Every structure is written in structure tokens, then in C-alpha cells.
Length: 350
Image (cartoon, rainbow, N blue to C red):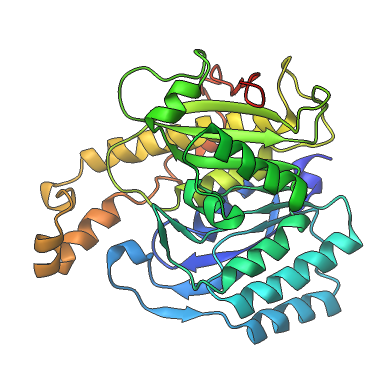
């Protein structure tokens, strides 16, 4: 089915200014030919990185009212579902019920669940959303947790290859998620030591992206096919990157088309495209930010930011994703697509 024949239901946060949540996801999906229906789980002036924001969270009752009216008017007809930041357990439960209903009505629904809960060891949602997310996992076609979120979902602290295998096994076998993408993985020494040479990064700061798929044929006795690729980090603080990546991944994921490259999976090929585009967009954003006036590119300093809140505001404003300026990147114009994810053949056996 061509993108122009498909419809995405996007349920995630909304900001008036900047590009996070739905603002980072909807435009890229539309650029790639998808019709997108949008439900906002929050309505804020700007993202939390600015330090100050105003607005409101959408309640479970309000979400249910929206979903019910859409159903009554025969407007609930997505072929793809994308869910992101949903701050409370009651609201998340309302989304879970909808996802279950949509999946029952259309078993072929492609559902990308981005379990936005926190990062770097810190939750930024209420802890009571965790069991709800675990209940939602079997509904998902793809999940895109970061390193910390994968630990939270599985209850496994990722400290070595054995624990990483255990976490992926839990997601595949206990929660029946066919496609797992773990993003923004810090390259700790134990992980670098485990990586095959084609995936091992050169010197410098890099992060890793790992995919694990049970949807494609894999060797007997192997739980999944695992692929990985490293990406150079870009200096600075940027928001909405995961939201953009998840939208691009959903757009490029075509489960009924066989992989084009030997050893690849449908998931690894879609992630390769999403990763290249996301990284190129970040490079453009960084380049634009570096050319701003000096008072809009001050380095982070908690003490100075506290004394002058607008100092932080100006810095955040200059680092909003350059989606409009980079729309050719979204469409794939002139991109170097020569860095596909590499198969980690020995992942389950080394």
C-alpha cells in the first residue's frame, strides 16, 4: 500500500513553539505522503527544556470524548498508529483501550509505540505509567525505547551482553513485541568490546542504535535477527529528536515488502533510513545554531541560566529542529544512504 493510500493516527504531545512531539512527527509524515490525524496529549507553549512553559494536559475523559466522537463519525480508520508522550496513567490507559480496539478491528495495523518515560536514569512521567506501558507492549508492531526506557520496561539493568540479551528476550518472548529498536545507547567499554569490527566505532563520541526483529526468518534457535550501527554525536542539547526518528521509522517501515539487501530485515532497512535522515537533520540544525548571534548560543551554565532565564530560552530557541529548512532531507533528496545497519551475527552466540 502506497503512503498516499494510508492514514496515520498520531497521539502525542503538542507545543505551540518549536518541534517536539507531534510538531516533530506530523510534518515529516506528511512530507512522505501520509495523511495524519492528530490527537494532542498535552498542549504547551514550548517544551520543558526552556525551563518555563504554560498550557495543560489532556485528561483521560477528554481523550475518550475525542475517540468516541471520531468513532461515531466513522473517522477512526488509521492503517498506522503512532503514540508518544502521554504523561499520566489514566490518559495512557485511554490510549491503550483505543489501540486495542483499533488492532482488533484491523489486525494488520502497524503500531509504533514510543514509550516516552525518561532518559539518563531519570523518569519524567509518573511511575504509574510503567505497568500500563507493559500492558501495551503486546499491541505494538515496533517499540523504540531508549537505553533507560528499555531497562524500565524489562526490569533489567543493562550492564553487559548477557543482560542486553535478557532484555531483548523479555521484550520478544514475554511481551511478544516483534520489532524492537533501542536508541541513543551510550557506548560503554563493555559494549564496545562486544561489537563486531564492522560496527565498532572509531575514536570520538558516538552512540549506538540496535534493532532486533523476530518478524523475518532467522537461524534456527536464534531468538531474533539483530542489527546495529553507530552514529557520531553532535554537540549541544536538542529536543524532539526521538519523536522525529520514530515518525521517520514508521514512514519507512513496509512490512509487506521484502528487504532489498542480503542479511537485512524490514526493520533494519527502515531504521537505516530514519537514522540517516535524523542525523542529517541534526547536523543542519547544529550548523544553523552555530551561526546565530552570540547571545543565542551561550553554553549551558545552571548558575547563569538561573540568574537570567532568558539566557536559556534564547539557547533553546536556536536549537529547535530545522524541519522546515530541512524538508528536502525528510524527502531523501541527495542523502548518502550508504551506512546501513550491520547484522550482528554473533549477538546470541558470542
